[in-house]
Image 1 (cartoon, rainbow, N blue to C red):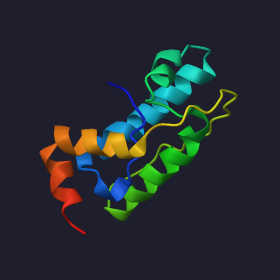
Image 2: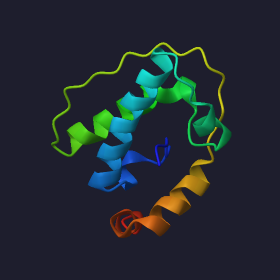
Image 3: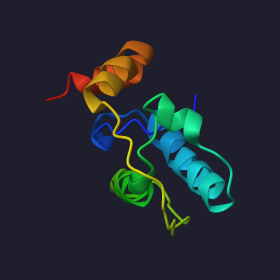
Length: 107
């Protein structure tokens, strides 16, 4: 499921870090081309005004880990904010993913 986790990128495994990065590009593209993201907003999986900021947080962590990042995201958003519950997202992430759970134990 496409979503903005909002979780500290340092606490995300490689798969979820890179996956959310791709999803920020997909969601921005959807908004920029006029496709609806209402379902993501209604399910608290997207705070649209934060897409570019979130992308940059993920990209910074990718670079910190030594991954390549060659896909800047420039996105103009005019959608209302629909805040996500980061604590609930984090609980779901570590329940789903053994690697993210391991990272949660590291300080």
